[in-house]
Image (cartoon, rainbow, N blue to C red; front, side, top):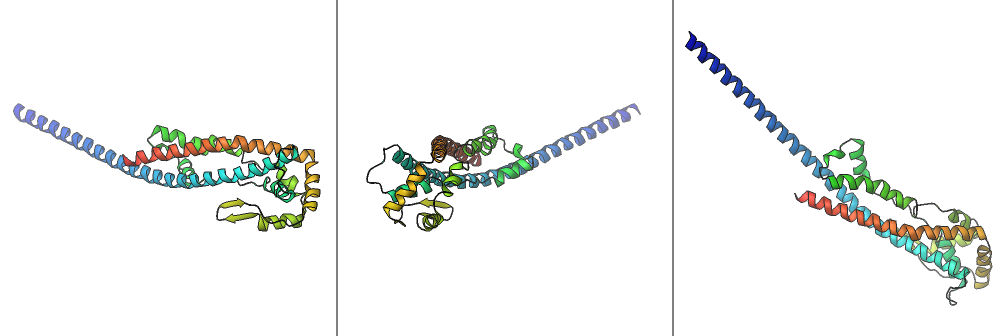
Length: 249
């Protein structure tokens, strides 16, 4: 009887061990499946983030070129006021420069994928710590640096457009400004009025000390903002490179 009891006990222990091993294997397989699903989901998010960033990269380049043209226009106006402009520059071209210097182009970054990750609390799906830190900065403080410099709506814009006659502005919109898709192009155009009338208008604009003060402030912001835009572009490239390495793993 004792031998039978011992055998039954050993058998029961063996059964329990087998069940425990089976449970552990099942849990391991389940964990492996869950990790695999999360990795697939992570790569899907990374792919979408990369597409957004590639779109951003193009937008940043267009924005940089646009604000460079605005800066050139504003610098021409200030050079003329300070007696440093090329004497061959026509009064009409200076008047157009006053108008072009008022242009803005708010840059809209592609943030739908990041917003989805953040809103759903799934940012932790991104295992790469470098990426997990860079992406929020790119959409947060990185973008804020731009918005506080080049991204402002300058008072100069409202002031100068309230002073240039509306018929001249309408002509400039139709002939000196072109929109091609997401791109704004500032260009020279044939004169709408003669040099004498242009001189009268730019003399009035140049004598407005508040207007010129606001123009200097805006041009200074653009000068600083170009550097922040370059930093944003470098960060964009760095994140794209990191994502590509992660997707290849």
